[in-house]
Amino acid sequence: MKNWGYATIMYEGDYGDKFPLFGNDGSDWTQPFWFELLAPYVAKQNKVGNGLFSTDELFYDALRRCPGGNQGPAPYSGDYPDGTNWNCYIGRNFGAYGDPVTVPGSPGLYTGIAGPFYYGNRTPPMPASKIKRPAQATILTDTITHFLYSPLAYPFSADQDSDGKPDTYPYDGVAYNWGRPTVHSGGCNVTTADGHVERVPFRVLWRMTSIGGMVSPLWYME
Image 1 (tube, helix red, strand yellow):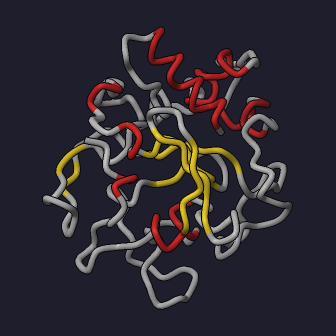
Image 2: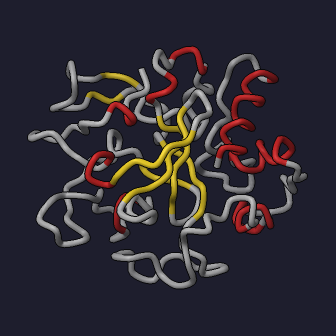
């Protein structure tokens, strides 16, 4: 995970302080995705242009595979994942299309980008310099495949794990917005925009305010 964090920083240096897009086009999945754009920085050549991103061998490469996962469906997530059937990979904090969101119950009523990685259909790549506290801004974490829906753009309203608290955006019945926030002894690894990696307990990272915002500063970009 630290290597992918460093790769992101090196990419920023080569591309005018811009984060790589999550995917170039949300309606054309043959266009490059983030792990293909960063592959040359982690000792792998990509195969951009050879079909869907999920057919690129990088999609399931060991470079992205978290050893904390295992074979089989992720907890509370139906039959997901498919493919290699490994259920934990390094993935991006996905912010939809880069549109600003206003988050109720957040510190100071947050209005800004939900996540630094999004499809480039409408919004150009985000400058890394927009993040004022890079040590507190999540760019990578443990996920089922290659992404986690930011809870700022996709707020929790379903209790997928039946613990009495909302923990999931109820779009497709997959727990924790496609993240794996409990995979490491009740927590997960998080890489922030300054490149450092830390384990964050589930009860800290997933804690909501009383009216729908997220308590942890790790979710807030600007």
